[in-house]
Image (cartoon, rainbow, N blue to C red; front, top):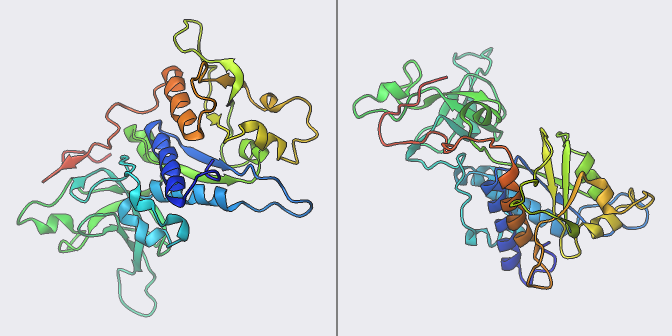
Length: 325
């Protein structure tokens, strides 16, 4: 979708719009499909355009205070400073106290001295004025999700409250948890993962998730009108919505060597083949526009997965009131 952008700045803005849509509609995963033709013989490599889109999406999803540690400088990221922030719950400010924070391991150490001392804790940068101490020996540079054990920022004159049994205010107390815990326990959107698929079939069948409802979008699909009383979506546990680029999903289908011998067209790969933008006034609809329009319509028929307070129970200022779970 970015290969027809007139400049790197415009391509970056397009990728930023996709990231914002993923955040607005609480996507768990964004799959970038490389719809470039496969070369004759040999294994297909990912095109630079697909790699560019995936790289900007990963940059946008990463909290600002972790980008310097986790994301290497690259020419694709030259203009990311133009993009609006994702401003998701897992991107808290340094002045906000939140129950969960994303972090990166800065140092691993042992609680005792001596040649035989084994590392038993790690200090994690969680975007606050001091790191969080977790009682696990992790790998330096690893990204983790931390549940904060402290109840909030230390009050004036109570620095010891921020330490860990005599830490003297050098760290906060935390525990490394599964990255899905904020979703399960707090009802908070907690970012998306990015997966690169070399072909359409790899996008549909690869990855860790099994999608039991697959929706393809096309101007040749069945009109989706959420205002109709009989308009609904089948029950599902995991939903995948696919969007095509300039030439639609049909191009990705035609460029997939695994699907060339398959009977039927591209629509046979999906449970629903929908047209979410009927009666359009323009000759074409850009991919970034189709994603926003389609997800806005589909979301009216989706179950509510996140609480309306999906801002991660942010507490500003002094002591927090978020009880430990």
